[in-house]
Amino acid sequence: FAPMVLQQEFRGPMLLCQGCSILLSYESLVESTTPSFAKLRGLFNYGIGETTDELQIALVCAKCQREVGMKAKGAFYLFGSSFVKRSDKMSVGVFSLKEEAAEEYATALEEMNEQLGLQLEVTRRTLTRAKLKTFALDRTYDCILLVHRAEGRILLTDENGLYNEFLREALHASDGNFLMILHEDEEESETPWLYDARKLMELASKGAQPSVKLLARLQKILTVRGALNQTQYEFLMCFLYRSLYKGLIPADLAARFNLKSAPSVPAEVSAQKSDLLVHLSMSADTN
Image (cartoon, rainbow, N blue to C red; front, side):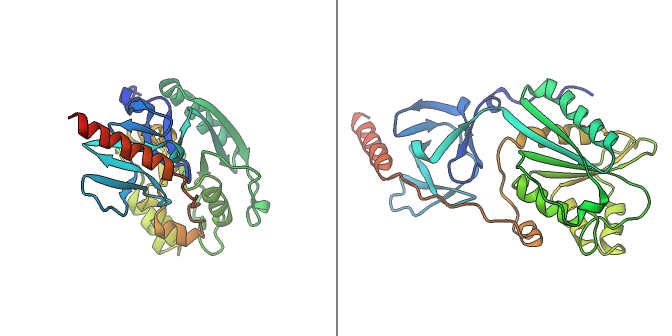
């Protein structure tokens, strides 16, 4: 496969929300810092908080809603206590009922990482059907892959689904950074799809597995014939890199699998906010 190039600005240490670990920015976008705040030229996953001054807009985390900073004079400011720096070290769990399938995709991730350059820890786990009904994970992962070798019709999700309890555990343990791969040992398809929509819709409707449709809509499921196509390869590489941080969990996914809401951590920002307001005031006086 041709190498996929990530913009240099979006490589290296990430700045994550202190409360819920969602991505706020990258260290490469920081213009200056003080003990109380950092000035940045780019910010992600934020919303507008209660604002009384149209020139100084309060910013909140889009996931946990804690106040994280302000926008003023065209720049973004993050309070020092609102974020943590995340390195490129991450853990991945690859699970399958077939040992060779887990090994195949774990190896593929390690090969992709030659382009990404992450500090990757990949764990291979072979599942057993007898334990899936009461499955429990003993640790968390930055992301989880479940590889299923398609062998005829089978109930995968929902009531009496083979992986229903596993899905719940995996989504909790990875905070939503989960991907299911349905692998068929057929001739490789030249169609650049992520998944076979017709096949998944058939599973969802005729197989009474509505969760399959939900996972497809949220791009948390791939159907692979023979080998990953170019689109799937690049998607999987992006999924791996983006799993360095926690994303926003869609409400319907959270409701379906009873996912925990993001933790809300009280923001100790009053002093830092005061420092930032003083800084902005002094900047205005000198202009």
